[in-house]
Amino acid sequence: AGDAAAGKEKSASCLACHGASGKVSVPMYPNLAGQNAMYLEHALQAYKSGGRSGGQAEVMRAYVSGLSDADIADLAAYYASLKP
Amino acid sequence: AGDAAAGKEKSASCLACHGASGKVSVPMYPNLAGQNAMYLEHALQAYKSGGRSGGQAEVMRAYVSGLSDADIADLAAYYASLKP
Image (tube, rainbow over all chains, first blue to last red; front, top):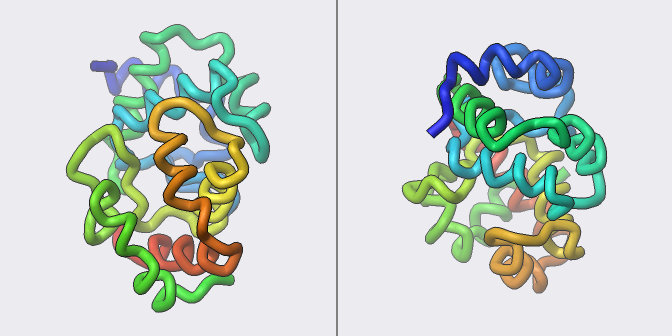
């Protein structure tokens, strides 16, 4: 399982679209706060591997392309830990 | 925008995995309650069009393949209306 505290430190690039607390201000983006960590980890891996296309998927792929499996697990743990 | 009440009536097939109130019991699935309607609509359309692959995407594609644009908008409105 990921480390939520480490995930918070890695989340700087996520804030602009997903909000400082994982709640978005622009409705085209998903809220992340309180989402299941396992699902978040799957989604990030899917963006990284090209399993998602269309919409903002290319943007997400660019953001996650440099993340390790541990980075992804940490980010998933962090957003799962936030109050929805 | 979709009709949340109509969406509720169309949500019978969603409950097994996404929960009666849009909160899952199995962590591999995403919570839907309180998610942004615009994002939910995008995600359902992406599953339908094949824009998502891997994981449960084929299962989702099967579920949404028979849904109209109006059905998808109604379901998105319904889950967005639920308390996260």
